[in-house]
Length: 266
Image (cartoon, rainbow, N blue to C red; front, side, top):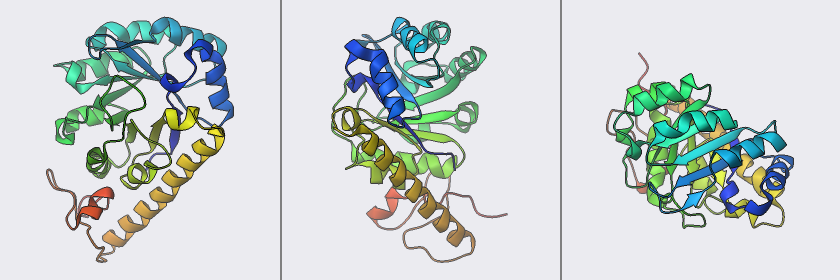
């Protein structure tokens, strides 16, 4: 299972002191910086863009910038974001008819490629072809376009499904994630955690980042243990084996855990 990464969302920061906020988050233990770019078309807001990314790269040269592109024409933005210093480029599946070509061009630019799905998009829309081409899948747990929204718990099973289907892929969650909702995300197998207001509005953001990390690491250990038990043939309540459409069985609580995690041994 991929390592845990915590990526504070700079959308919730003091944007008038962006470079300072980025440095502060790194000092607080952030692995990545989550940079939200909005074009006013795919979503109604307009936030950041290549100049802001370039400024951060200049003042925080070591930062890994996880650029979340909420834009209607993802191909148009690839090279400007790469030139500005973006590290990873996430586009929305809903924004294009040819996601594989977008992924190809992102990788050609030298950035990591990631694809996002909105709350209304089922995980089954992520084909094996797409998943095997990207470095990460982002499951939105709010509707894109604004910070501070309430976490949509109904999105959590999509995280578990994607973790079960692609055990070695980075799976990111973004939207309403904080100390009160991290356990659902972590237990579903998310390993990249985006948190905005939960980090920036806390008087001890370093403690919040550490708590999010610890919850994910503990969940990963539980997932590994259940995986080993399943492979030994032990009966785990609510656990099943991953199929193309159904990956879990049992009561509702079981849907918070990627217990299937591995296909039937050959």
